[in-house]
Length: 89
Image: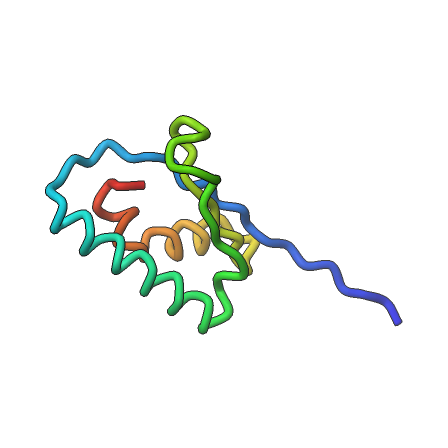
C-alpha cells in the first residue's frame, strides 16, 4: 500500500510585547491551555510544547504543530489562542 503524504504547519510562538498584571496574565494563560485542549480535541492541534526553561531561547517560547498546510487556516487557529490575542505571544 502507498502512504499518502500530509502537510502540516509549524507555528513558533515568540514572546510578545504585552505588559499586564499578574491576574490578567494568569487568565490569558488559563485560556491558552484551554484553547490548546479544544484544538487538540478537534484534531487541529497535533503537538504543542514549550522551548525548555523560561527564556532559555531568548524570545522563542514554544510551538504548535497544526494539521493544516493552509497558511490562512493556521493563522486563524493560532489567533484563537487568548495568549496570542492578548500579545503575550
